[in-house]
Amino acid sequence: ILNVEQSPQSLHVQEGDSTNFTCSFPSSNFYALHWYRWETAKSPEALFVMTLNGDEKKKGRISATLNTKEGYSYLYIKGSQPEDSATYLCAFINAGNMLTFGGGTRLMVKP
Amino acid sequence: DSGVTQTPKHLITATGQRVTLRCSPRSGDLSVYWYQQSLDQGLQFLIQYYNGEERAKGNILERFSAQQFPDLHSELNLSSLELGDSALYFCASSVGVAGEYEQYFGPGTRLTVT
Image 1 (cartoon, rainbow over the protein chains, first blue to last red):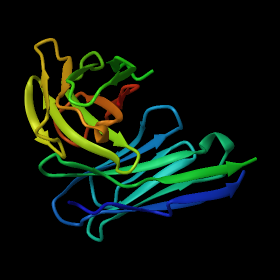
Image 2: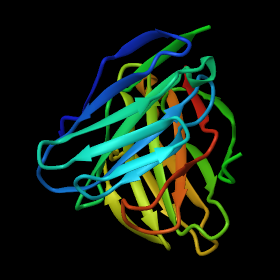
Image 3: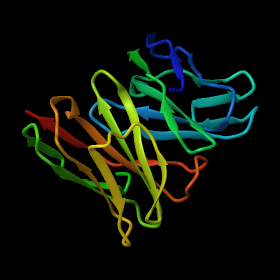
């Protein structure tokens, strides 16, 4: 069983705060890392697919970085808004196409 | 709307029974993935099909099986159901076979085993 961990498990921030969370994964046999945004009562929605060490991706106020050598990825949200409230999930994919999800970080943004 | 459809939305059945969940991928997508989300275990990868062939297998029980048909829709068959099989089952689709392709999730099928 591969160990994919996300921290923190939950986070409460005020509107306008910037925040970041971490996904840790095995540094061997890496193929790709996915980030998803998952709102309550909806389905996971893809944010980023990251494949190369040093990758940085950005979509609006959300960005992500990847370090495959040390086995971590950061997700950053700049100027959090109430609509950013969701669970952010990472998924590690190895060379055999096996996916392992982290437990998610639940973000709550207070207006 | 991701373009991935799943039927039925809800399913209630008894222990020992067999059910079939159906997934239609987005137009043009050749890969279908099946996931299980139970309360105590988070989201678990079950199995992947690409263009009709099994490509990767995760934590799928022997009582469960899947297939992908020539029209690319997929079915997940769950048999000898147990109370612990109650979960939300998602399918997702992507255009390619490997992990560098974005996945699009369907709305899920909620299975309740009583």
